[in-house]
Length: 230
Length: 307
Image: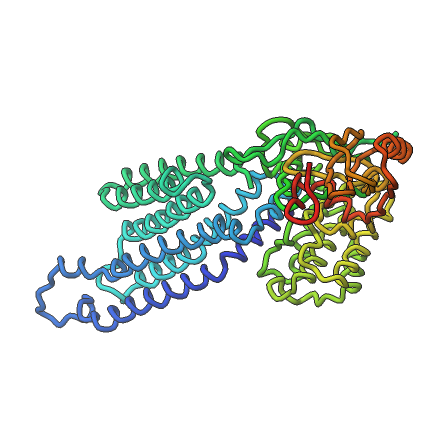
């Protein structure tokens, strides 16, 4: 009950940003898919006139779900930064940390509620929209070649990178060091991981780098939060 | 047996090289209303945060309800009400939302009726968001939230700061609601000595991080005295009276601020130094506090010369 109260509060603080990002991604993704489905309809096998030479490379290239990738990436990183600031920087400016920390729960629970809310925010605002777009693009007779599972997984990788940005922002927000010293560590680590991940080609490499970075960031966040003065 | 609900031992806190709290040894017995007073920057907020485990001490320790402040379990926190400095609450929540949030942490203790009565008494609209409340209204919500769980120990950090006289009066009356519940202990820091005088039965004075007094209000009132002595020719060169805190002199007069010096002793000293006459000036608590914590030489530029 106490954890749920904390979780509700943290989710409520994320809600405007979750809605904004979900609506933006749904609008952009939906527009791109609909436009391509409408104007790119000639690329569908069923609509080709007899005798047309099919360029398979072109068909693969125009897997339109890919077009939403940069948008998903930017929105995900943006959401990560905004939620990190909302959860871990704003309480410092509004001086609400003492009120929050004097709850009859452990500090671990307070932190866990924040991180859980952050993760749920990503899943709801970007994850569900991404699943919906993938489902639409995979329907028969929408595109000549439905998007591959890898495209779907890559979308989730972008969402996870947003989570890395969130954790990096959280760590920097919690640090009491100076900007020119270790305070910036969280953001720098998140940036390095994001760049590294984007340059990986194998899914195993991508997931490994994300898993390692999340583990490092989480351990640092917990350590900092439990020891920090407010 | 009177139990100690709050205890600090050599509590010390440095911020970098700045000493904020200096070897604070404090014991607050159960059931008292303790005014925690000090000038700006005296270390009141730091001391309170140390007691609540929000800051880590550089040295020493503190215990609340028998539990080390740095290891306060949720069950212990549940028994302690805390009103933060400036009444910092979640601005986006309405009073009703904040009530629901707060109630979740006190499932068995929360007194719905008490909270409703207080909100009604303060005439606060439940649906209004915290960000739309005035300072005074926020303070009232803050107090209602802290009192509704019926805490054994209530710690308030400058709760009346920035409030006008009427709101302050209402706030203190709300506080008295808790005081009337038997066995409850209140520690509240304040700059306003009138508030302390109105509700406290104990006073703790902290100055530059150092504990200067921890006694009943009556003892403090009786202990700090201002004596003015008049001399026919000139004032004595040396002032060697016991309990001397400050001494200011003009040509034929001495003004002494004394602590714990008996009237009898003052009389004898006046006779010994050949004073023509002397009188003990009645001071209110605020004057006593100002004199008690005044840095030496403060009035040097005016009429008196500090020695």
